[in-house]
Length: 367
Ligand SMILES: [Zn+2]
Image 1: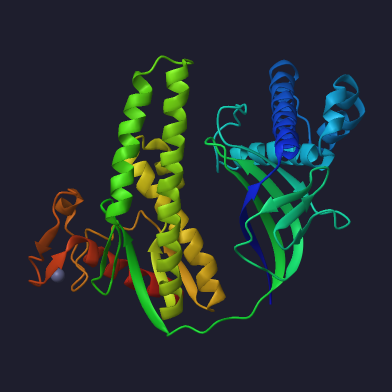
Image 2: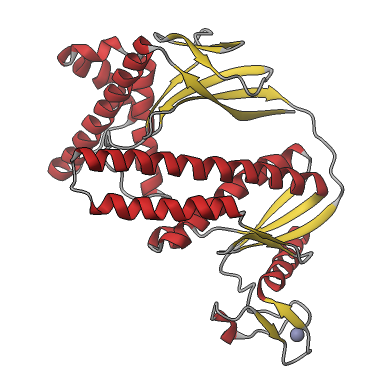
């Protein structure tokens, strides 16, 4: 069978390549913002819009003549920037995302380029990119397939990465045939229908605490000052450490879940609700849950299993998994354990929820 899979590598560009990347980030941002502004103006003044093809024509025949420096960077990357804008609008109209925002140079920078006529390749410890040449990487994962595209990114602490999108043949690994339900927790990573509770590892909460402290320290510094820049960098580094640890754990547990089970049922994330919720802890846990589910999805597919997403609206924590009685007072999150008044079963809140998610998922699978 064939699939498309991403491979991400830490990159160590030389000085010239760094300059080239920065220039390309800047030009892609410029093109994105330029056409976003143009689209807004067109709509404001004429109630009109511009398609990807129109923007693309305008870019090569008008804008590139006015702004000669756009010719110095990867032209495919500039086209991709327009695709990106087009998709952002599409997502907005289909209510999958907010209104497209202007790109700022303060945060993570990236550009994407396509593999046309084998102009992107990987060879041992380097990746060759259009106009940038051979960029040194740490080759952590080999693959055997066709490269579709490459995305170059720089984090706010100054790390570079190159992600390759690869089309490859793959074989399905076996699994142990189990079925399991998972409940996402605020305090724990997740709880299973087999009554296993996976707490957040101590190192993670330690670094998360430090991150919060650094965040407070940054907000006290004068904006734009040298000290604020230092604090921003320190926060960005801590942030990366946290996501490194989290990634590592997620890879391990998703691998375990995928190799043990044929069916894994999870609570689906309500993306709209997530955007409305501004509590930081909730936001972090939702983001890490959706990332966990993303990893689970492709690993389960690798093992020939099925991931079932149970709608979040389903009141999994308010229903007794033994007799089906609904208890609305369980909406109160402080109640961690309870005894069902109708059948007398004793429940841990999260285990009970995970059991209900499994049952609901199997029901969805059957119909
Ligand atoms: Zn009951």
